[in-house]
Amino acid sequence: MPQTTINVSELARLLDEEHIHLIDVRTPVEFRSVHVPGSKNTPLDVIDPHSIVDGLGDERIVLICKQGGRGEKARQKFVDAGFDCAVNVEGGTAAWAAADFPVVRGKQSISLERQVRILAGMIVLVSSMLAMVWNAGFAGIAAFVGAGLMFAGISDTCGMAIILAKMPWNQVKDETCQVVSSGRSA
Image 1 (cartoon, rainbow, N blue to C red):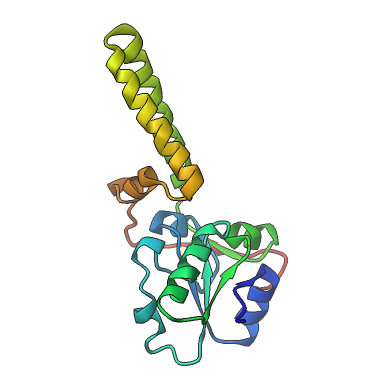
Image 2 (cartoon, one colour):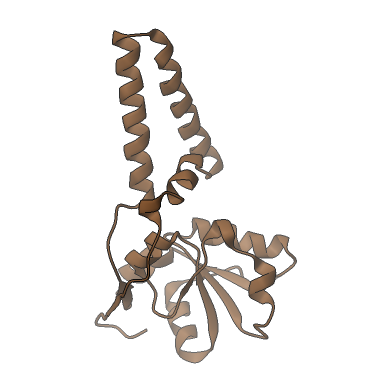
């Protein structure tokens, strides 16, 4: 059975010893904020295993996200397309940074996860207040958002996050980033 995950120490070794294709599957804004040097951004919702595998030869494909969940979903896309050549980084960029490996930092922004919590909370608050003072029917909006959050937790798929990721403030223009070195070498 092929290997499906690697840890950040193994990733550091691979970056030193082999030519690998490191794909960060987070949103462009998340990638701009912080990423592993040498990684390329291809968001999960647009990743196409066939176009990535074509022309790579025997290069190893390593997938990384924030904590490992989206990386695993991307790896599954490769498996579903008939490729077992991709591995996921356990713990993602969070584990990489926590291990004190160098990262590239750019403009910081509010994470997609926080944006979802802010928007969901605002919708529930406003619809609940409207239901109390104007029309009880507005309680249905709060119930709908609650059901959506439950679905997101159960399925690990969040429709609100998908929509927010496409908003103009979550799009990236060409900007410069800087490598922030740590005490360790990658």
